Amino acid sequence: MSNKGLRTTEQWIELIANNELPAITSTAQMLDKFSNDDKSSLPKLSQAILHDQGLSSCLLKVANNIQYIGVNKVTTVSRATVVLGIQTVKNICLTVKLVSSLLATKNLDINVYDRLTQLMANSFYAGMLARMMVPNYSEEVQEEVYLAAMLYRIGESAFWSAGGDSAKKTANYDAKSTEDFHRYCQETLGIRFNDLSKGLASAWNLSDLLIKALDQPETRTDEMRVIYFADKLSAVIGKPEGSIEAYQGLLADIAKIMNISVRQVKVRIEHTREKVGTLLSTFGAEILTDRIKALPTAKDFNEQAENFTKPKSRDKALLDGFIELTKLMQHSKDFNEYLLLALKSMTNIFAFDRSSFLMLVDDRARVKSRLVVNKSGQNNAEKINIDITKNDNVIARVFKEDTPVLINHQQAGRWRSLITQEIDDLITDCSVAFIPVKIAGKAIGLICIQLAKSQAEIPKEDFMQVCSFIEHLNMCLTMIKYK
Image (cartoon, rainbow, N blue to C red; front, side, top):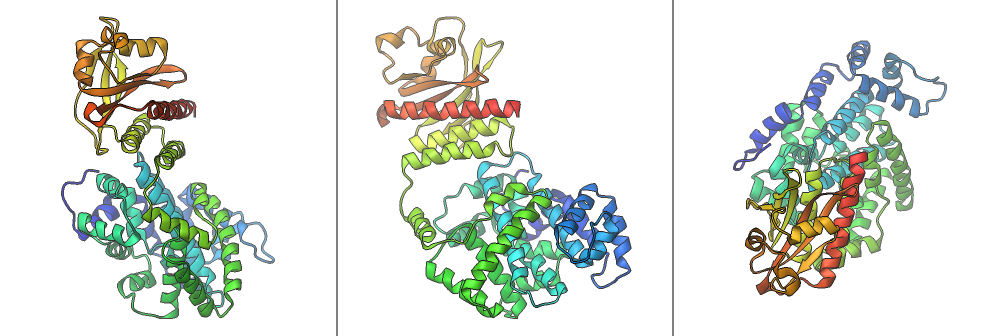
């Protein structure tokens, strides 16, 4: 989806609700037909669910995972709806569709995918935490606070899933804090995620309690406070931010509303985390399990504060690049995603003026630019097309000898005769390196990194680190080919 100019909140709501996430829309509309307190709705709801094999299977798994004294193995959807209750069943159906629809989007930018999966994990955890905080309330209220807390950030989740280029640009913003990030979103997108959540909740008729919590946050009923506490706690667990004192104060507030000690609250949170892992597996969302973290410690808050105040070292940035390439294998088989991530990482980490992937074409007679990234990490439209068969040349040598090369002095005797006019036009006034890109040992092209002579030479140590990074890229490309 392309983004031309800013959209209004209403346009984003219409786009997401009606076009980008039709599975959630249709499921929400179907579930809205059945009243929570109407017993006669159970058989009708069971029939509607039977048409969806994924929902039916998941519902049976959940029904059999929940321990009910005296309840035998549940083998039919109709029995599952009776055992679980109509509101629980509706929440399960909506949760399953929400998870599957948001994760179904293909070719997400690595930073967008990272934000989406962490936010989805946080949201699911928030719903379970909210339910944990009201153990003495009716099952109806427990289900209401679960749904409201889980969907509290549905606007932001939907944006990451369906936001296209806008989401990619937003995810790559290096925010100094959560407040800084939300300020940036409002300035560049023209919306607040809270407003987007409110609009989607209304469009899908999700929950009166959710709409009220989003529309009237100042209302401090116990249910509202539980939703607020659960959302805030899951976010802090996912990414410790702020002070340890504020976090301890949040636990104290939760203990007060539950009328138990802070120590008991921590024990119940840990039990809830174990349940979350089981349910995520049941919902087919195991990929989110690792995002559900244990309660943070003072060390976690200190490290987070240091990350905001201290610049990232080159070694740390390079390690992060290795990790991002590895993580990409969890959800993408698109070679271009791996190559683009590698080019951007190298350009950012080593401050190269340009990083290019030159692909072998025309029966390996030429190399042609497939991806070119400039020093700002943006795609560069410049086209490169070089014949490597007419004369003995450095690029042909790289492929023939399967060896990367570093050229800091083009006029040096060993390089002078190997640089054709086309190659010279490419690397004029630059230090340059060529590193082969291979799949299963066979070269498909090469990475060309360039640094303007005015910026000094490419250090041998940097060149060796880049070569190691490209070797890791080659390993990833080989693995996804056979995956």
